[in-house]
Image (cartoon, rainbow, N blue to C red):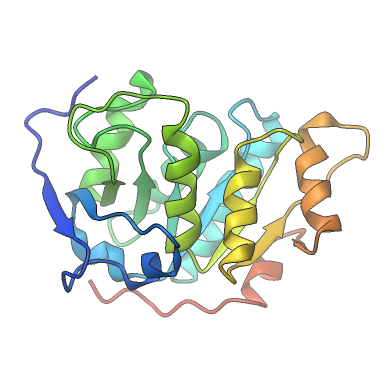
Length: 227
């Protein structure tokens, strides 16, 4: 489904508004397509990611972490996907216009995937920003989403993995974040619950085990917004 009429800004690498944190990637995007307020790109961000088919508790945790981290001054970043991503975006939007969220898309910025997030994408464009490196009209392709995840990792100061199975795409985001020197946080769960297999892997590999937003805030401090 297309956003219409698209009001899109194209930012070239090297422009003053191009996020400096993307330069930490070995392959920074040459261009970013932006739908919303590009000044939001300069805000301190923390990513909240996880399963597209989370448990009810996972959804509650996504909402809790998004709201608390947003109140603490972070721009909540995610990938507009079903499940944990969507819950984090909606929770932030629900706090009011001073609380910003950003979504990195796996399609061209003029398209919305999944289609049921059309209204959510519009709301994010008014209270934050939609971001894509893909040209206009680019539809969802499997290889787009790992590339989207590297942008999420690079833009963030840290990544919180709420729920993730052992083959979850969220692990790509977390591992790239660790390679870039970002903080990685993972919520633990029952040892036999497959929804937490990926989180437990991350903790074994050095991610910080977190039980509540306070555990994240012990590592990261977010100044209040300047927009």
